[in-house]
Each structure stands twice: as structure tokens, then as C-alpha cells.
Image (cartoon, rainbow, N blue to C red; front, side):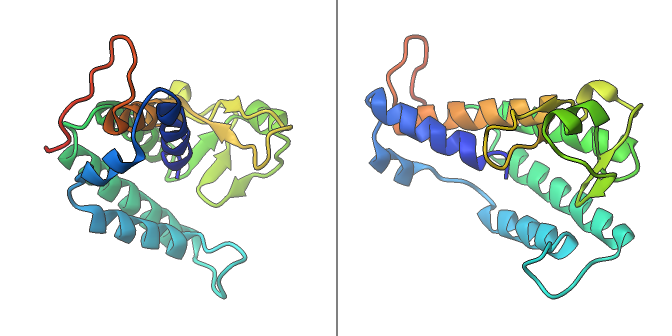
Amino acid sequence: MVLALPFLIGVLVALLLGGRLRALGGLRLHWVWLVYLALAFQIAAFPGQSFPWSTPDGAAVGLWIASDVILVAVVVRNIRLPGVVLVAVGLLCNLAAILANGGHMPALPRALTDAGLHYHISMNSESIAHPTLALLVDRWAVPTWIPFGNVFSVGDVLIAVGGFILALSVTGARLPGLKPRPLST
């Protein structure tokens, strides 16, 4: 997920800034079980080479959109946590782009080329030259020298920044202008 890596990087940075790993134990997320359900939907939709089935595109799109809606619900339920507003806005941006373009996240062909990727449709992503809501689609490329590079959207950036802020806050990192907040919602 887009949130996992920025959160982990945020935890590592937080440790350098006096944050405590033990403080993560105080993080109380509501409806965590729904995150697992959303992940199960995503795996069912796009099993890749790891599982012995494939899912027809229409069903895959439905499962992916359902997983996004579930994740939005979880994020909204936990909205009082630091950084989670950004995660919510990012998820909604991505969902809007997906819904406006027929169920796949549009990726600009130039971004795909810049990332060293070449496909028309791959899992939940589709190469579209002139998508609806073009500002919200995957429009930038991770440099090819970074392993597992991909394309990303403004929603992905917001999700990443929100996850980073959450990690800094919950670990108690000491930054000018950032006050650790209580974790209960």
C-alpha cells in the first residue's frame, strides 16, 4: 500500500529525532479489521502470479473500488489522528480519478515511459493519454534507478505525506512546530 513505506520511513526519521518505537503501541486505530478486508478484496481482484486464479476485469474493478471505499471509511473513522486528513484527501482524489475514468487509475503514457513501464492495462492501472480529471491521475514517475519504481498521483503524494506525519507524531518525534498529539480518537 502507498501508506506503508512513507509510514516506515517516518518511523525511522522519528527515531533519529527522539521519537520512541514503543509509542507506536499507543496508536489506536478504529476498524482495523476492515483494512484486512480491503486487502483481501485487492488480492482477489488482482492476484498476479502468486495465486492460481485470475479475475475478470469487471469483477476486479468492482472489488478494487469496494476496497477503496472501505479504506476511505476506515480513514474517515480515524480522521482525528495527525496526518490522516491528508490520507483521506489523497484516497478521495485517487477514487475520484478511478471512478471518472471507468474503474482503472489512469496513468499518463509519458509517466509510464519515464518509469520504464510499458502496458495498456496492468492490474488497476490503465494507460490513458487524455483522462478525465487529469490532475488527479498517475502523472509522475519514480526514477528507474529506484527498485520497483512506478507511477504516482497527487493522491499518492498526499497519502504518503499523511503517513509520514502520522509516524512522526505517534512516535513523539521532536520537530519545531510539530507537537505530539494524543492518540485516542
